[in-house]
Length: 295
Image (cartoon, rainbow, N blue to C red; front, side):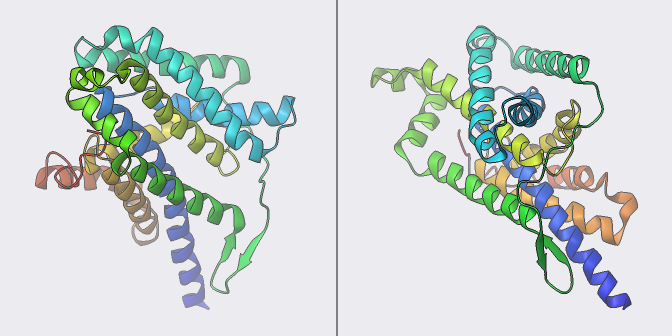
């Protein structure tokens, strides 16, 4: 009986770790793509993740658009807002010190979160589970929706990595970061490419928000709560490293889940302890020497 309870707790936390790792990986990849091409630390990423969840909730509440429709519409809508932000704000700061971009995106994050809190309050809003039920595996109950999130996130991350690393478009993106003048000489509109790339990274954040809405309550602070961990994931994996963001996100999600079983008191700090150790051993990030991602 005791062993059964222990195994249920263990596998349950591993599943929870995979769920958290799925969000960490997708959000980290978005950050890595934006930093790799634009050298901008996008502090608005958490607000864009939150906006994805809120747009999904608004579509369902006021327009009757179900989850599956919001899964497409919400990321596109938030990505368009992100591209507008890049054109009106970030492009004006591209020749200045990186600190200006960091502070500007942080200000946008505070403004967006404040506006949402002012309009909808700080209390979490529930979002209906589009895939109720699950499988009883004997040692644990496996919800269908959580399996969907892990599988969909993994497919999205691998697809994004293949796009960046193994397509002509990805080659253009990496080349534009190294020498935009040469890329423009081949007739490629680099500013438009930068805008679309920023929109793609923002879209990944919003897509993560839609996936998170049925699991976590939709709230203005949901982005700021997760982004502290996501920035740690990006730093550990290597700034701008696509494969580093993906692998580190899943790995640290599982580490966090196992820590909740073995030593719950350390669950909230284990990722940051891991970051200190990793950076002590490899200051540029674990995967920085193996893959430069969008760089």
